[in-house]
Image 1: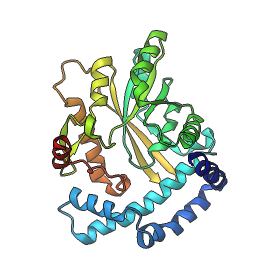
Image 2 (image 1 turned 180 degrees about the horizontal axis):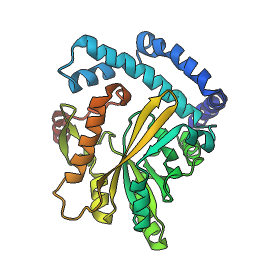
Image 3 (image 1 turned 90 degrees about the vertical axis):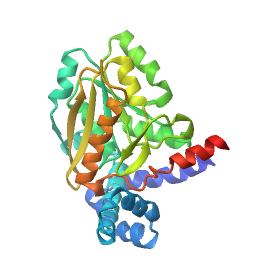
Length: 298
């Protein structure tokens, strides 16, 4: 069944990706009332997330943020789709880079880097980061359940110079790169939901008690690599600025969870600044302390 779905969907997606972005944005405008008003794609989740994250906002303001989010969300879907056929040269023309010396200085010092990212703006286009750093970009990701789509999306992203590595292979890859003297950017998406078995730390994020992955912190302490936050800032439709912010150059002597709290607060500040540009369809708070306790007692 996975193969059938893949071979039915991919030709259609590929043909769509051949359309110019201006046409894809027209489709995005058409899809907006469908996804928000007609179908209401995950609308209940979006509104619930927004209300809980911004209790100080009235209902009219919450719905205005939601409408802006759906317009933005449809644009991002079209831009990600375009990655299938978008040339690296064209991608780089649409990206502006601030603070490139943050990564270049690490390279000159012979250091690999742990890169923290989030589902903010078009996170997929941050693959263009390879333009400003001689490091090999390596994206740590969770493979899709459909192996056909997983292979397709890996090839799509690796077209622009990155290498995708399954999460469970991270340590093995870092050790191999160290042994061979290779310097790399290891990219992690920091705002994914945890699962029951992996929940070890809770913090307040957007006014809600939230389970947070400790993988980035553990990896930083194990490797000693600098930790850099990458923020994708929207300039206008189809154009983004990628900011690099060094969170920690030296991770020795830090307090427990200091690294985790730093990247969580960094993302939180960006969301408060432009709330419509985060991925609100994501069920980030599906796991609560009450549900975790019930699962342990079951």
